[in-house]
Amino acid sequence: MPIITKISQGKNNPERYNIFFEEKFAFSVDEAVLVRYQLTKGKELDQWTIEEMVFEDQIRKAFNAALHYLGFRMRSEGEVRTKLKEKEYGDAVIDEAVKKLYELKFLDDRAFSEALMRTQMKSGKKGPRAIQQDMQKKGIDKQMQKDVLDSYSEEEQLEIARGLAEKIATKEQKKTPSQIKQKINDFLMRKGYSRAIIQQAVEGLDLEKDEDQWTDSVKEQGDKLWRKHSSKLTGYDLKSKVKQGLYQKGFPAEVINEYLDMKEQEND
Image (cartoon, rainbow, N blue to C red; front, side, top):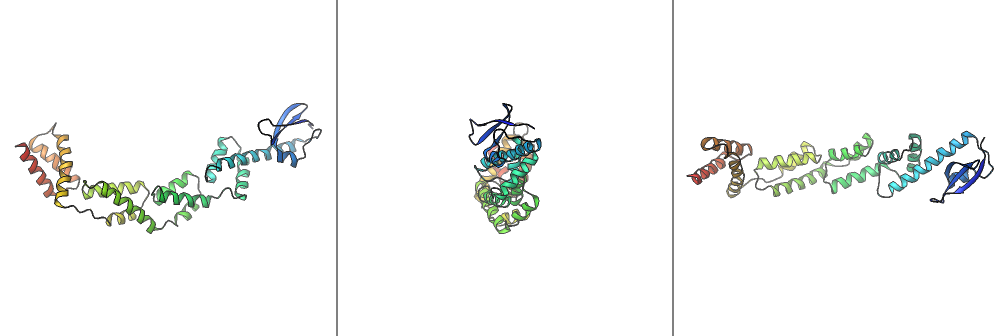
C-alpha cells in the first residue's frame, strides 16, 4: 500500500493540500478531507480509502462550484446539474452535491418556481403556457409546474391580458376592429394565454369607430393597396383587387365603396 511521503499546501488555494507518494504527486484534497482522514506524512493508505477520499473531495469541489453559481441568483436544480455537468463532474458526484445543497437550503425548486412565475407575470406579462415552457427549460418537475401554476388565478390572467389588449388597441387605432382583434389574439397566444382568457380580454374592449376614423383608416390602408397593385393593374381590375383586400382587412362595404368613389374622382 502507498505511503504518504509529503504533504504541501496549495499555492493558489491554501485550503487545499497536495498529497505525494514516494515524492510524486498523487492527488489533492480539501482541508476538511485532510483532517477527517487524519492524513499525515508516513501514513499508509489502501486503495479503497484513496478512492473514498477522492470521491468525497470531488463532492466538495462540486458543492463549492454550485454555491458560486448560486451566488449570482436563484437557480433550479436542473440548472445546477447542467452547470456541474459542464464542469465534467460525474453523475454520482453531482447527486451528492445536489443532496447537500437541498439539506442546507441552498436549493429549493418550489420557491424557485414560484419566484419565476411571479417575475414572468409582473415583468414579462406572460400567461401560464409561456411560464410553463420557461419552467420546463429550467428542468422543473412537471407535477411541480402544475402545482405552482395552479396558483395563477384566472382573475390575475385576465387582468394582465386586458392590460396588454388595451395597449395594442390604442396603438393600432388606424386598423379595423377585426385587424385589431387578430393582432391581440396572436400576441396573447404568444404570451401563453388560453383562448378563453383572450376572448374575455377582447370582449371588454370598445373597438367601434366613428365615421371620421373609418375614413382615415380606409384611406391609409386603401392607398397602400392601390400603390401596391397599380403597377400591374388598372381600371376595374385595380378597383376589384383593392376592394377585395379591404374586405379581407375587415372594412365595411359602405366604407370601401366611399373610398373607391373618392379614388375614381381623383383619377378623373
